[in-house]
Image 1 (cartoon, rainbow, N blue to C red):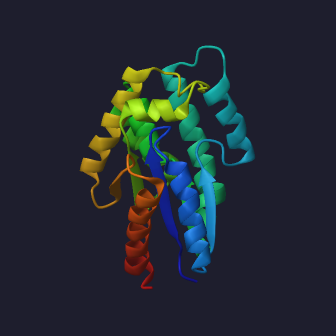
Image 2: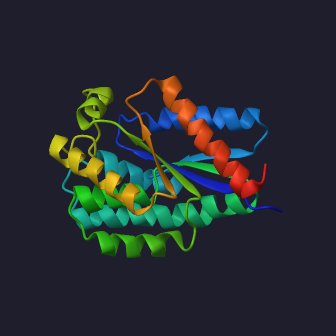
Length: 209
């Protein structure tokens, strides 16, 4: 059986990445591909408990504690869901993955980037995305799209989110072959067209279709 593909969707809250993920899912299913959608944090039952802490815990969460909670969720997610799905030949679409941790906990919270990269390697145990779509939008626009009801991460303040955006852009420069930058200020239709074309190219290259 041919292995599947692993595609991650990254960007700030309010960038439109989740909308695009769902549009890509529908597009691929119409083409007959076996597609599964997942997310981080909180894809699985254990992860949902971690997600609740990360996004809604009302007390203080130390920065390093936050980092390890994300990594713990990822390790469980990869071993029990992502890796088996890829091995079954499915196309896995994931809303956030390792780049989120490096952007948010590294560039945003100021944790050691190189340490985070090493810890991510341990958490994913060799399972890396074939492609990452990074949806870039101005921080002000992203915050306006999110609205007034924000979770713990969304409420971190505009300076924090500017650091996150800059972190994502640095990661894209470091990994131009894997991370494809998409202007998310455009219309949903235009952004989808750009996303679709990148996905089609990946399938042609990796699956020979």
